Length: 358
Image 1 (tube, rainbow, N blue to C red):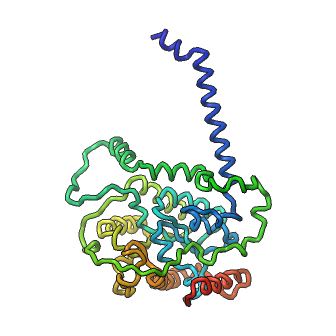
Image 2: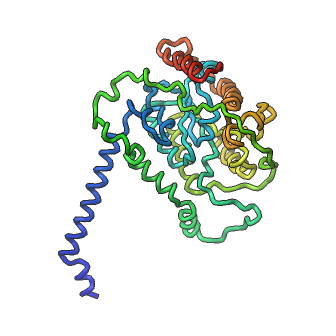
Image 3: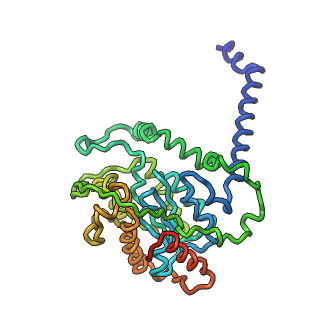
């Protein structure tokens, strides 16, 4: 045993180990430096990747956003910031990307709070089940395994290539913006001082699409008492988002956008229970098709996953009224404020760009 230990801790092995550790530390530091340089407020909109639209909030002038929405592509397809502004003068932004996870959303929220202090955060709920294993309501049974075993099982069940990718991209933005590092001016002090109003996107995170592809009706929203649990890792980051908002004095609203495929009453029950437990408001548009006059033949762009522009105007109209009725005491109409004249310009640009009237 002594001989074996002496071999393991021999000078040559210790030296080799020290070299490996040193190399890893230098590599991590280099990644952090490159990440810091590649992540620029001024060129965020030029990044051509799945997070391009989500990071558009970085181009908003500091502390000018009163409402932020965060979540998956369901959100950027169904919430139109310019429509809300035109009706009530409230400024908003959408921070969402395809298959966005709660982990990524929490990271986005941390970034958002470095430059904005929204009064209301809309959290889209479909992402709570991103990466969730297939749910079989007929196999529900009491779980007698230990807490440790359940945690290990949940970790292994939720750990996937997508989750690993999210972890790496969240920690090192160079992997997200790898094609931009050569254009970077590292640690430029001018970055935060320049006027960014000219570069603000008129979409404010919304993804305009007026294509029409009808959806098929289904029975996903038939009432039931069964609940589908939120995966533990997603629930952990959801709680972190809610806790961070409470710490910063931000009101949270949970919203599920209309979808024919990824949502059902099992999930509705779970999110409603979470909302009740945490004293949060929850709007599930999948229970409001008649009230909103949503048409599954005309209001989807891809057969039922995402709303098109026509459907988005309906959900946005409802949300706009809800926000005004619920938060008018903390939200301010910016339409006649000279400091927000760039929103008027954005509104004109949005209408011209897409040939629409709000």
